[in-house]
Length: 77
Image (cartoon, rainbow, N blue to C red):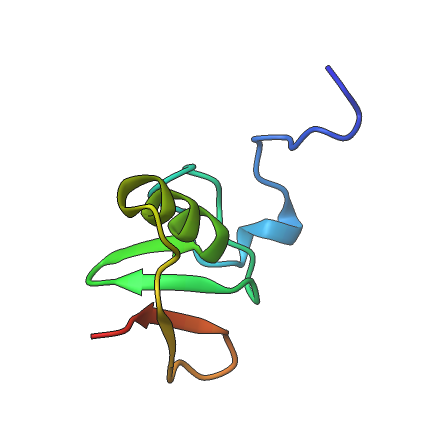
């Protein structure tokens, strides 16, 4: 429909990436995008912060989690 909208078909460029998708918005996560991992669920950092803010009225405290070359966060205990 619009040239700037995301095409949902897989191309050769995205076929090699992991199939992780955000549990909130259900879009695929970019390979180096900041993400929040809770148990087996993965979220975009912005999506997680928005949902947490809506539920509790304040932003979550996130700490960096070791995960190689990706920027990964987890909720602070």
